[in-house]
Image (cartoon, rainbow, N blue to C red; front, top):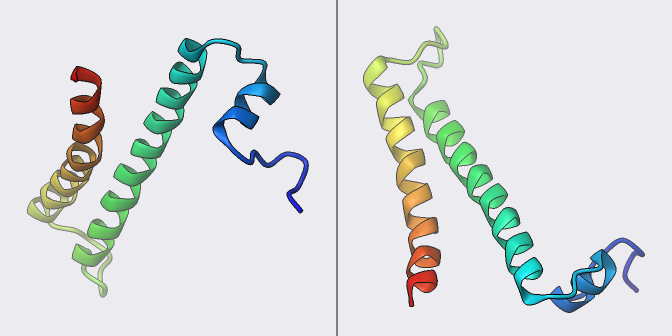
Length: 89
């Protein structure tokens, strides 16, 4: 049995939120996807940065900081590109 606040499907979510058009559903999905991308980017940055941090001093070199930021940007590109391609088609 599902908890009252859980959504079983996209249609159940749309019904509970009062969305009536596909445009409203599409906009809500885009917003949620943007939040997910930000989470993936932050997670990647934090994980790579923690691996490159010196365990004794807790400091990170500038080049390692650049690698961590580049990895986060790469994760965003890899996860966002398929969505961009599907919108063009």
